[in-house]
Length: 293
Ligand SMILES: Cc1ncc(COP(=O)(O)O)c(C=O)c1O
Image 1 (cartoon, protein in one colour):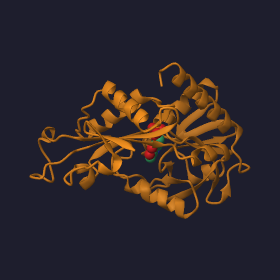
Image 2: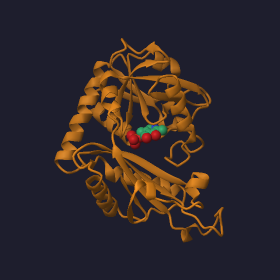
Image 3: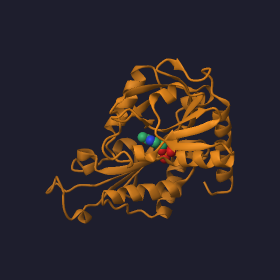
Image 4: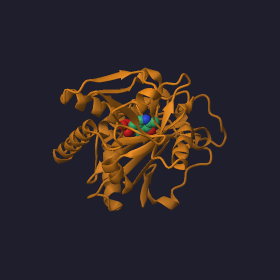
């Protein structure tokens, strides 16, 4: 696999980042992950806009232009044999570093950020999960992704520990819960519930990453005339839901058919989830076909 690192294309095992890079030392950086369909990224502009906005919150420059990013992605897809299949792309931008100043606090503009793009095939398991549904587990209150939950920073440890807990319990996703017991999001996704034909998703103000796919689902629900509320939700709402699903750029819409071993609905992907999955697939097909992907 070739990766892109600071202007070069390198075999993945030859890509080296400085031992002084603030991303490595402190999680000082941001990233985004998105899906390529037949070599084309969906929503690249929106992902880059978010990446730049989140980098801005850390006073971190993102030097490549959108056009340069698009060219790098096209090259990686071609060079890695992923121009005709689906791929998982990650764009990481971290602080860079200065050996003379390992804890840079001022004049951050003198540091050259590290820009890394990696592209891999989408794991085959995701298609089966989309078809059959996934099992999720609820984590303890206080399992949020840290103090900056609205930003996609390199402080990925809480989400990683959550995924490990999910894997240890034989689940594919972990649901994070705030200190005061509200549902937040999945460790790598946003969460939606359906009850009596109405959708709900945890409110952004409760402290979560309001993802691009969440926005897409909200727009699709509006198009399909399905009422959808952004509001505070509790674990009991999830356990009592008719349907639940997760949404993220790479995994798309995944039905949640069990939580902590308790069936959601009849332990099958529900009709509303299916409709939204289909509508999302159609949206992707159109975006890829007309080149706006
Ligand atoms: C914690 C978290 N929430 C939500 C999402 C979904 O975001 P998006 O739809 O932009 O991929 C992700 C994606 O990785 C995530 O890590």
